[in-house]
Length: 198
Image (tube, rainbow, N blue to C red; front, side, top):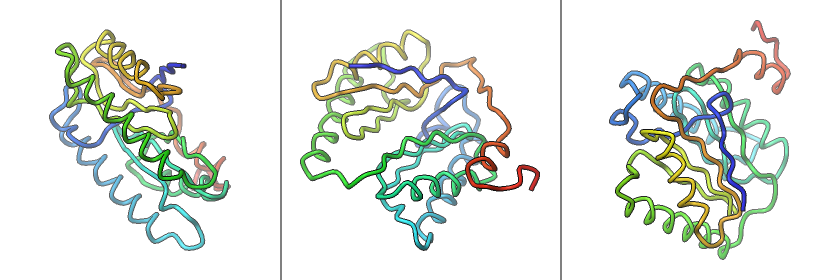
C-alpha cells in the first residue's frame, strides 16, 4: 500500500463547500464553480470523443481529472478542454485509459469511499466536511483542506488502513500553503499543439 503526498505545485482539490473552508475566498470558490460548470458542459458537447467517464474537481484554479476513457486521445482531449477554461491554472490528469470498470469494481470503490468517510467522520481530530474522497480502482484521492499537516497525515492514514485500498494520493493543502504553478499556456500548448502566446 502506497501513500503519495502531492504538493500544490502539481495539484489541489475540492469545489463543494469551499466557501466555508479556511484559506478560501468566496470569489475563488465562485471562480472554481464556474470553471467546473463550463468544462463539464464543453465535455458533454464534445463530438468524436468519449468523455462521459471523466470526473472533474476544480479547487484554487487547479483541476483534477479522474475516471476512465476508452482511448488515449480521449484522455488528452479531456485535458485540453480543461486547459481551455480561463479559470484553470493547473491540471492534474489521473484519467485511466481502458475498458469501463465492472459492476463489482464500481461497488468496491464505493464501499472503500464509504469506509474512509466513516473513519474520517468518527475522528474528532479530523474535520471531514472539508475533505472529499474519490476512489478509482482501489486508488484513493483525498481532496480538500486540512487545518494542519497533522490533520492531513491523519486523514491519509485512515484511508490507507481500509481494506482494498491500493494507493492513497493526497491532494490537500493546509492554511498558509500557496500554489507554485508554472505558466498555464506552456503546458497547454505542449499538450494540445497550440501556440503558447495565442
